[in-house]
Length: 451
Image (cartoon, rainbow, N blue to C red; front, side, top):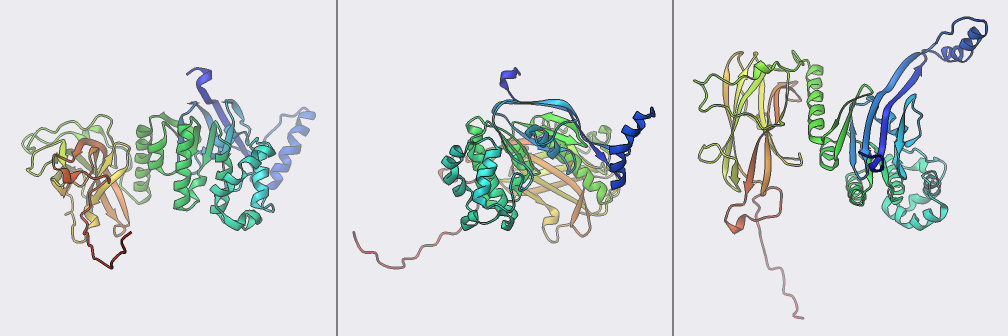
């Protein structure tokens, strides 16, 4: 990528903080190292080092939307603050080409004693707008923020959601070439979040480069062209959203296993996923879809997944209203007292459209799994999906804490693909994502006058 195509370039970026055990150590660090050097003694430090970001490099092309993901404390906010210029890096350098609008931590750039109106002018000035430009945009900002009479009240009276409304309205009104958002949108109410997402898409359609931190993996998968995964201040992966997000989700689910007391959270040896004996299978297992993802602690292994039509035949095409079943062949590698089996169907954007697990239904329990045993599990239903392509996802889990927590034994994401079609009957054409039988009623409630 040439320099003319780069909106943000990050090169070997690192940020170090000095951690002091006591205020006294901070004072010692300010005075004693200089004093020791003056008398010819080697200097010593009175702090410990903490590297919030370590040697991170990546580039964002103009017009790209890049998500930054990772656990709390992984360095996401520090990275964005360095890109915005509110923090100085310890080493490395940053290249930014274009006007930047940033929405960082809640209330950043606001004076709590000023009114919303006054903060609009002050914050707009900090973002590089002239007073004339702010005045020209003022009505648009106030309308988007929609905080009513509170626009003339001190912002110290604002709720967290009102803070975000005003801050996002200012940033979005700038028509920036680069917009940086750090988790702030998660604070607002659902209606405002939807409003912000529509505005984000408008900016993206105009060619704005967007860099944002989010814990909403669905949004990251849907709107990002690339994803950066940070872990302990280092870049674990950068690239395709589907690949990076699935790897991150897999690691987080294994962490849930560890916290809930699973026996082993290490990835299972690939030998554990060997196909079942030929004498058992109705047919030879077909390889799972290329690019599928799997994770789990290995106490069970999914050996095969078969999507079948209403006649019990393997298929990759289902019509609306057609019965289907998902057959899952599972080998238990250890005794599992309370197993749970489920599936989900996702569209090609990664949205989970349908899903069910036996533990969702009262009285539908799986028998305990015995080590070495192989089980055939059929999940039956009726196709209610609109026309399009979908993937099949399977989860074999263990129930703990009265179904409040599940441990992941073996999870396969995007292991099979199929098409849903309306068929030839005209009544099957409908605009929704899923079909739902509903009842229609009509009653005459009065006579209208003729025009």
